[in-house]
Length: 333
Ligand SMILES: CC(C)(COP(=O)(O)OP(=O)(O)OC[C@H]1O[C@@H](n2cnc3c(N)ncnc32)[C@H](O)[C@@H]1OP(=O)(O)O)[C@@H](O)C(=O)NCCC(=O)NCCS
Figure 1 (tube, rainbow, N blue to C red):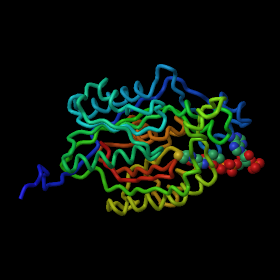
Figure 2: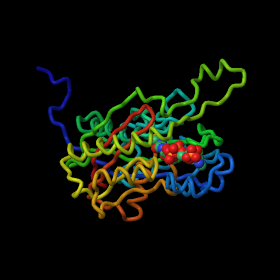
Figure 3: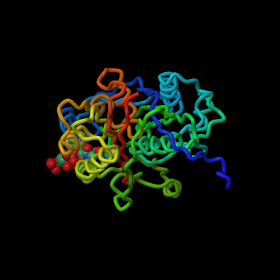
């Protein structure tokens, strides 16, 4: 009987390289507060954010992605031609078709790599990482490039008190490839569309064009219900990812949650009873909430600062508009 070219062997996968692009322009709270009648103290206390970065016109989704991806491919010790699949997670690329992954692959020199975008908001990176891992494990791909990228400043209303101080821009990338031992654990993921209204675009494109004023759609967020959902429900998802990977919280080295709000990070760490020695990502303080880019950006900073070391275990947990969520345990490359 034919096996249709499918190998009966499933191999292990791992992250081989990490890269990041942080936009040049650093925006302190003092530049945001007047338009939302807020204060530096309120933003720091409620979110942990002190600065964020907003992309300048040349720092496009494509440009930031290519820069982060080049670093990730170099860190993996590979050439662009070794990449046979490119997945881009984003909700802020303003060109609906074609997928930006195709032109990113072309500019990097990865063509004819398979290339596509996914829309899973702040969970987009962890969703894409899970797809990449499974593709590598069954042999669909040898090396997949996963990029999380956002220019949320394009779709955030600077006069909206609930979003203007949170969202920001940037790109992070990882290369996923085969590994001798398992280095990406099983994903725990899901969605709850009943709560889709908690974080949503204010209006659809057909509503925009039906309106003579052509009002640009921006992000709407009901911060308080999102905060409560993330703080309580997401700790359970994170715990399940640890259980499925067979890692006890006391054995964990690094915790890299989606950088949504410092208080959510602290609440999850408390609920998970993470020991003092677990290094916790706190990139949000300087980077803001960059949605799909936040985990690879935070990871890159921890590796660069020596807070996350090669061979250590790290727990990722991401959640956002949809609502969607995904968590997995990985080994630091
Ligand atoms: C947005 C967020 C920081 C707001 O904090 P909060 O503690 O929930 O704030 P609330 O909306 O309950 O408002 C509390 C008070 O602050 C005020 N407030 C709201 N926004 C404010 C702002 N930007 N500046 C100053 N005051 C503000 C409110 O008017 C309210 O005042 P009152 O007590 O006098 O009525 C918080 O809800 C949050 O981070 N949610 C999760 C967001 C998130 O993770 N999003 C991404 C998921 S991907």
